[in-house]
Image 1 (tube, one colour):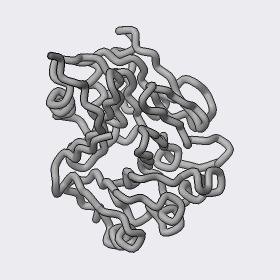
Image 2 (cartoon, rainbow, N blue to C red):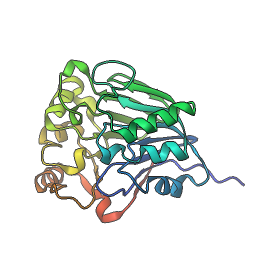
Image 3 (cartoon, helix red, strand yellow):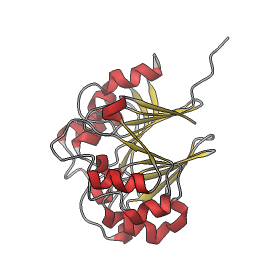
Image 4 (cartoon, rainbow, N blue to C red):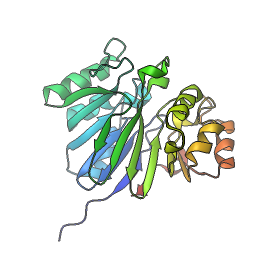
Length: 252
């Protein structure tokens, strides 16, 4: 008898960084790769012998989100490698791309991976799960990699999850003006490891998350900030942290 394929999110403990794995039936995607070192072993704990990922999203170029991409490109076949497009083009900007990420992109492309860059409005249908890209959006006229990160809204009924990458409250305001109550989600992947400058009160009033996931490790930035934790508590969200729990698994 064949065991059923897990349907879950795994927010992996990659230290001070982000990496979240989603399994829906036979479809698997990864949101960010964490820093360099250990991500292949982490993925292997959940995928076993499977060596194919449908989509790998690189929310932005910071190494705590993209540093494991080269490791993955060498060990896994990837259907699509997806980057943010702050200028509206469908191919990623390589001028500011770290060398290791550029090499990962070239290795993946040589193996048949589709390399693309996305903006708001892009939708991906995995059958049992639907994704919509909320940002970046060239019309929002935001500056910097963090505020032009890929923000993903995922629906795996009955759950709705917002992957907020590293956006600041300035970008949050732009999203609220555009999407309003459509931002309502059960689960919030807290932006920028719980930084003080992200996850504002106003955003939390729109999202109203029941659960807030903070992907964080030992750091010198004060992440997660006390102010952010307090805002989440006052919003009624249950807080879970990878630095306290290790990998956090959620069934869909």
